[in-house]
Image 1 (cartoon, rainbow, N blue to C red):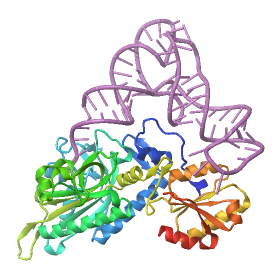
Image 2 (cartoon, rainbow, N blue to C red):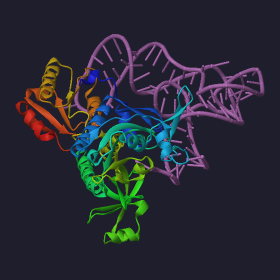
Image 3 (tube, rainbow, N blue to C red):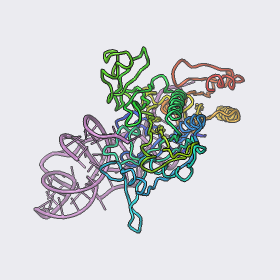
Image 4 (cartoon, helix red, strand yellow):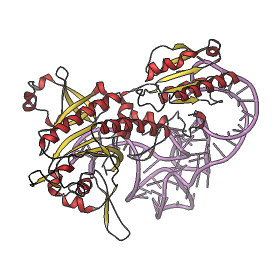
Length: 420
RNA sequence: CGGGGCGUAGCGCAGUUGGUAGCGCAUCUGGUUUGGGACCAGAGGGUCGCUGGUUCGAGUCCAGUCGCCCCGACCA
């Protein structure tokens, strides 16, 4: 992508009431735009990042048998009335609206009900199970207070996978596979080292559910960690009784702030009972389907990455998540510099690197470097008269370290080592 | 939903005892610059969140309303 063609621009100033680091950096760099409180658009750079996060999640969901689909955002009240969650008293985040004919409908805050109802059309026998449908879908939640930039919004994309199993054992096994997949996802997203599988309250059908909590001072959750045994417990269930189950006392844990980036829980028959999602087993007996639910918010993940990967100059994207892997900076507008830059740009593109090329002729070097640091691509290549004379490229990693000089003919192998 | 703060040009701000709105950044034009957010000269851009009231006159005073941010409560 030639930066001269990118319609978004970076900004030197910010709206005064944007306080969170994630919204400050993402707005300043032109990754997102704020439509209203708790409602953000993803602009080209931000959209690329969001899609990379989605891509990683998609691969790991497919790897555990997930089948992608897309349910509707507009929701008929029927299914929700059956589970008694249509009432604003029971579910206080509803956005509701109505059709021209006066009938009421809702904007989906989650999809257990509509999906359970949908699956009734396809599940009747034990032979139809298990099934693991999932989607990346927009949820609407009428939060009383949107806050923290893109971490807590009223409209957001969520990956929600649901497991439909024949029995508890099948659910338990799948749950563990999903948990392992989540660990892998956050590793690939660059958050692995600071993300904890955290015990949380389980509800009616299991002792625990699990939250994936990324350590961050700006987080709104509090968790308790024991490093030695790698155990984390969320605040709601952190007590002497629980810690004893792990052979520890409360004093063995440290309190940390964290952002909940994912959460998995066993639904059991909660929805299959009330919506009558049953199947016939081998002996001909009717059985309720055993369900589980597995969520990740890609937008919140993006905000979390920005919160945890930045310095005073801007964002430092993990290499698999960056909008572009390489940022080429052309210093000066001499013919030789622009020609060499373009040659490099074409070479890297042909070698399947994702490249942003700052080809703007009227922008001073200082501004280009500042933009590059702000946007935060992992590798910056500076093309200048001096470097061309020496037949080399000047490479700087956004994450830190001194500049390296790489001979022109070794650039592809160098970048392959660096980025793949 | 409770408490606090704020709405003046795209963004950040100033605006005195009420007298008809200004600065910086950004944008546009011309020129000079080019290794860490350049400089000079010129230009465009605002029914002062909205509604009503007081007044000869309201950005300024009063009432209401809408929106935004922070803290807290809430968060399948």
